Length: 483
Ligand code: GCO
Image 1 (cartoon, rainbow, N blue to C red):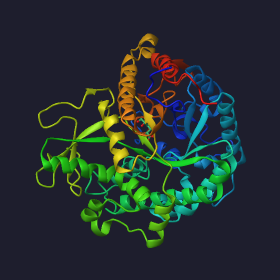
Image 2: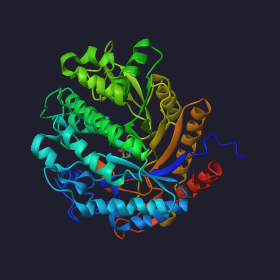
Image 3: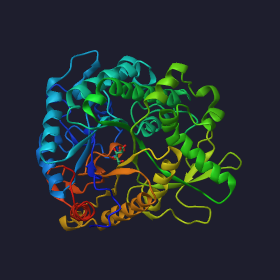
Image 4: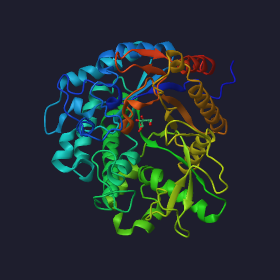
């Protein structure tokens, strides 16, 4: 008997995404994605790299499944590249070789007793949809997403029991339509240093279409597949914990507002059928409305679980009632700014070599507890949590594998998660980001999150200490693998 707080059917896994690990960007009939096009433009990626080859998991998936088997995980979270299945969206043919790849991957996992936990889109979408109708800015994308989801459910749903519709739509919208540092490079003048200034409404329109695309896929799954196939479907959100900058009521409200404009923006409509009321109050006409029919559809379909990606926390400071310092990343519209120190200069936690990542394990317990209360303890999976670092060019192999800080990070966050579970949060799984170093979006190959190191010259994988540590952690906390 163990005293593990994790239920015996808990999923312990590792996570990746198609664009970040697969490579083979134009092999075997794959179409170009928005990220293929974006990374090929000069100046978009900090170190000038791209995901053309990435970790070449497309060819090395067997080896990667072997790495997972060695750790002893019982689940793998990965995503399907939409453009590999439908190079031209619904305006072209299904790419059989793309389907075959995921068949091989899924079967290889299942042979080792590893559950596939599959995301339909993790930021990469066929470029065709951008070119034809501006992708998420158009309601037309709902049809495309549903068409794509249908193909995946039909083809893989006999074996895949965990589906995620969309990964971090909040991040996709903020970076792609607000700050403008991700495709499709659109930004709002009221935000950051946007030079060209697209419509202020764009982010909210894109979010609206993401929400409606999500629910269309869920509805399809519920009516056509779920009974027969017996799986579950959810969405994955980036979930930052916002602490008030001080004890003042204004800063407490600012922290709540930060959460409304980040997480509840999507989860409220999806779970409760409406946008948070303070968004409506602040944005007025700039916030799209759901029709009666759409509200019904949202309320009826819901989700089976919330996927929580949690890495870090920030302090939120009010700028409705007081001034925020210029350059603090403040959003005038929403009236808050984010800081890494509180009013008394106390830091969030240890700084890392990744600019946005601060170590604050208690944030995970708070985040999960908050979601439990707000959404009536809907089941949750921690779909990502992990530690990134910039590799020192002078580091030896020994330094590279000796990732003590990652071990400390993971163990403290898992400890924090255990506390939330002991207090009754219905959390059913946890995935480390990531199985291996991979293409870290804007940061390219420069930021590494892997339990395994990847040498981008040889594509060799080297096990880090953290992989060994995770193996022991799983063995201690999950003595029985699910059948
Ligand atoms: C996501 C994340 C991942 C990142 C990870 C580390 O949205 O799922 O952005 O793709 O690689 O969060 O930054």
